[in-house]
Amino acid sequence: MPYGKYQNLPLSDRLMMMLEATQAGTWEWNVQTGETHFNERWAEIIGYTLDELQPINIQTWLKFVHPDDGSESDKRLTEHFDGKRSFYECEARMRHKDGRWVWVRDYGKLVSRTAEGKPEWVVGTHIDISGLKELSERFEAFADLLPGVVYQYQQRPDGSSSFPFASQGLRHIYGVAPDAVKEDAALVFEAIHPEDLPRVARTINQSAQQGQDWVCEYRVIHTGTPRWVFGHARPQSGIDGSVLWYGMIIDITERKKLELELEKSQANLKLAQKIARTGHWEANLETGALYWSDMVFQILGFERGEVEPSVELFNSLVYPEDLTAVRKSEQEAQQIGIHDVQHRMFTKSGELIWVHELAELQADGVTLIGTVRDVTTQKQLELKLQQQAVIDPLTQIGNRRYFHQALQREYNRYQRYHTPLCLIMFDLDHFKRVNDTYGHAMGDKVLKATAEVVGTNLRQQDIFSRIGGEEFAILLPGLDVSGGQLVAEKLREAIATNPIDDNGTSVSVSATLGLVAISEDIDSEEQLQQIADRALYLGKQKGRNCVITADKTLY
Image 1 (cartoon, rainbow, N blue to C red):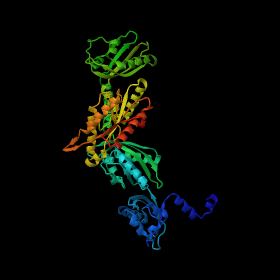
Image 2 (image 1 turned 30 degrees about the vertical axis):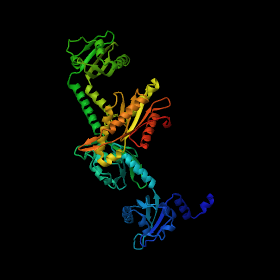
Image 3 (image 1 turned 90 degrees about the vertical axis):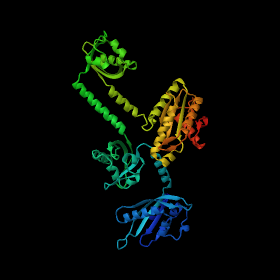
Image 4 (image 1 turned 120 degrees about the vertical axis):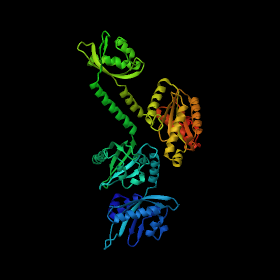
């Protein structure tokens, strides 16, 4: 239609054309008389023509709507008529002509009342959201496999709030079922530590006002013992004045304990420096002469007079891999005047400790005077925190981050030296059935037991990681395709023949493994992983509990 003719159409016709373009079914209902009108699209959504549905009245809707959803629809309409909702909105299932249920999103608004003030005509639309519902269900299943809780949090203009969606991890974090907070979030906030609640509320309000991500660490109490959690969510403003956050909350109790221990250790070390002697030393960079205080002898496990301090002796005690850093710091001290380095040293007994040296170059340009202190405990905590960042807390093997670091490293090694390398990707067959049948606690035990069985069948140099819910990855440096096949088949059999027993309950699982050996045809570590994934899914299509070795058809 030419634009000029379209522009000359009555506004009502133009609005109807726009509405039809949205593929929305329209409805009109007289609450008092029951008179009802639908457009042709309304009938098409459930597989009918409008003529097939004649005669049409409010019973037509009631005939096709799911009884549970019809009750919810009535409740929301009543709230709208009573002024509690500015408009009517509901999601409902309708029976299709072919017998399946079709999901629709139902919007409506009261447009007239009788002379007595009773609700009269209501108009609205139905939009088919079956596809969106299917995607939503898939996302919920995926979200339940993630650590912590994935959620939507809504804060309404009147100050009330709710969690329209939350994964099952909400039970672990807050001890609350997701359905219990769909309309009112109060139970979640009741589980937050009273001392942290004001800060959590303040950061949420700041995020809403400034439109910035919400990031917060706080304590939760639902098992009697406070646990630390970390939350991160992104806000989005709604047309009704509400704010909806999309985010994730994870349990960081173990990490927080280590951080607090580290802070305490650092405080104690600072206090010790004030009230106790600090080892000090003096070195001549030209002659190699070295003086140690009594505390330096004590730190290194020697008695005064047992050895004669010298730069040569000191260097012999420095851990070989750290000697370069120590010498570099000494050279820099001649330029900037400060020697500041942390490194490892052997004590008299052979124990390996960490020390921190801090010194200043004197005016003569060759004398360094400084202090040394044992920072072994602090370093061990730092290294433990670093390790925690790459370890899966459930199975105690590498996590996804650790795997990708190792994959990049091994791929780069292949690029330089062309050393053989195999990658195995596997996951447990029908693992959801284990969770559904025996519960998530048993599912966790199955994952831990699988990691133990696989770990005992790998070499020390092999790299084993959990990269998803029940998905694992193994890098086999130095093995070609035949060697990788032997390992993969050995692992498949070990998993299948080692049932997990728990209080009289025995659960057997199997695994499907995809194997790929690196070659010049593979251009990146990402492609290597993709090929192994394709082999894994091909194995699932072939019936599971098998090993599939990728050939070039999967590249």
